Amino acid sequence: MGEGLVVKAYGGYCFVDDGREVTRCTLRGRLRAEGMVIAGDRVRFSITQQGRGVVEDVLPRTSMLYRPNVANLDQIIIVVAFHDPAPVLNLIDRMLVLSEASEVAPRICLNKTDLPHGENTEWLDVYGAAGYQVLLTSAVAGSGIRELADVLQGLISVFAGQSGVGKSSLINRLIPGLELPTGTVSRKLKRGRHVTRHVELLTFNKETWVADAPGFSSLRLPDISREMLSDLFPEMRVLRGQCRFHSCLHDQEPNCAVKSAVADNSIAEFRYRNYIGFLHEVIAAERRY
Ligand SMILES: Nc1nc2c(ncn2[C@@H]2O[C@H](COP(=O)(O)OP(=O)(O)O)[C@@H](O)[C@H]2O)c(=O)[nH]1
Ligand SMILES: [Mg+2]
Ligand SMILES: [Zn+2]
Image 1 (cartoon, rainbow, N blue to C red):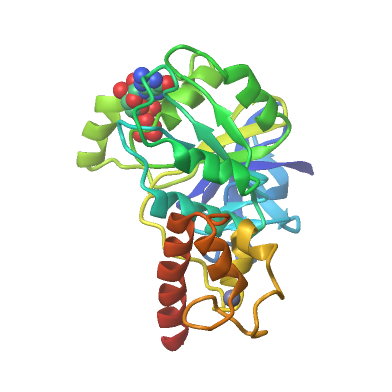
Image 2 (cartoon, rainbow, N blue to C red):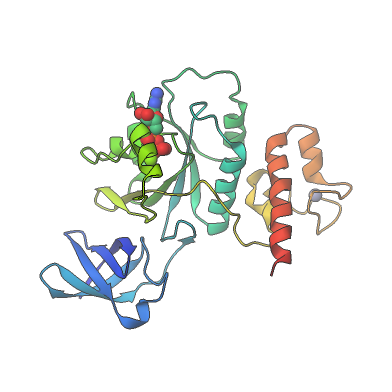
């Protein structure tokens, strides 16, 4: 019996890398239900014939990210740029909330640092001040790639972010010879019929895995209660217990520590606005249960 990592799973098959080779496996009966074996799972498998196998067991998962589904994910690399495309801060905050709720560490990667900055760059400092690690890269110039590789070393990471920020270009830089489609090519592919929605883990050295997250741009918030949401914003989390009301949602309540922090600029206005938007989404979703 071998043990390995599922790098890709679809259509009743999964591909298991045991560190020496990749084996295409079918699944034992009870594992055939949707979502039982997904990319990132560590599994035990038996070999049936040359290059073919059967997954017998799935080892317990340490984390679980939904849409895209990835098991045992260690971190999400949220790729952003100052422009081309301009950042959508609501989307960045959504990805951060999703990472925090999944207990997967988020990192922010500012790519395209070879391009001129433009005016509005304060938002990036806001994330740094909130405690998020910010990496600076240029997939075109090659800067920051070694630092990025160091952050990825030994872990399973997903690259997320708006289309066009350079996710595929960065992964291509990390894995010479890979040649994922980028730019206009990938836009053309999106219009075509063969849009892959499956997560595939790619390795660029032993024990280091990265995936491009397809369709990560229409993010629904995680299923959480309204009381939990502010704990997913680090700069609000540190103020927990300081509002007048124990159950304060930092919305209409008086004597709110979060709103005071927004008023004196120690919490960024846009972060608070996104929080309130998410709060209403979470409340609306609670009502649907
Ligand atoms: N100037 C500049 N362009 C980049 C950089 N990284 C990617 N691009 C370009 O941005 C476009 C989108 O890149 P791509 O990797 O397909 O983005 P993805 O949609 O996030 O995977 C392509 O035309 C790339 O050549 C960078 O660091 N600097
Ligand atoms: Mg891409
Ligand atoms: Zn409050």
